[in-house]
Length: 365
Ligand SMILES: *Cc1c(COP(=O)(O)O)cnc(C)c1O
Image (tube, rainbow, N blue to C red):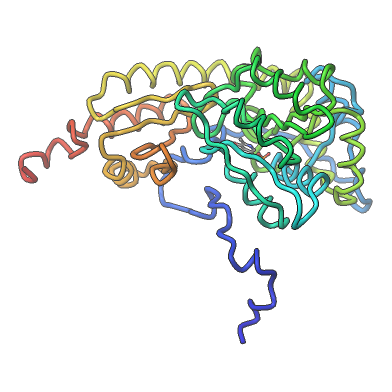
């Protein structure tokens, strides 16, 4: 008997999240995980490392509350937004009994966290205009405890419509919690729904330092919600989830200077995004360019496998979404700095209309 048979059934059957680092790949241009292109220096002071850290480091909680425009008792800091997703499920869903609702195609961790917790998944696909199917979601409210929406949505880049969200929050009051994942909201801050927290105790917003703040390596995320929701999550979270050096770095990122650097980075990446979108639109191998509210753009090609292979040969690593429903032939390109975007365009320009490298076109016909 294999020792693996001792594992829980759901774990034995589980396909783990295909994180960028797990998939691996060879290349020098990493555009597959929506990370920021460059790292920034931080200082770490080591004199307190013999002590356990604070469960909820005050400097980080207060810094994020001030940045997000909420009270500190509306903030929970966790090991990335991924831990926030899992904590919400573990806190509000009874294993083997409750369900969450997701709107695919969307971020993969909602379903994976639910599965590992023994919690069911109701899928309500996005509409053809890639919005949550509001009437259909409302019809399922009595079946689910948590509704996960992603705005901007990874990988399609669309924002969740505010009117539909407000209606859903009204209908869901005292029945279900609606989670809006704002991992990319810094790239379109005017579209945040954080202001709705004051009106709806059943709204929860998740955030991260991994994307616009350029700190994917420290694993630091946030849950914003009603103080009662935050208090429940705080009962479930590990006793010391945020290592002391991480708290120090996060506090620096949330200082006035850290925030200014982040905002400059957003301006630069949004500029690169506008440029590459314009260039992509003129290429014959490009069939569709999706919404672009995050630091990435999903693109449908004639033949995504050929594009993916040509990028790989050039050392450029993209994320392939072509096997996802409705996303055939689509690849997601993280927005990097100008040199990286130029490298992407150079490969694409070398492809013919059918994604056959121009110099091989006659040979294959
Ligand atoms: C990257 C991402 C996360 C995970 O953020 P971490 O803080 O790195 O765990 C959550 N949600 C979405 C939509 C993401 O794209």
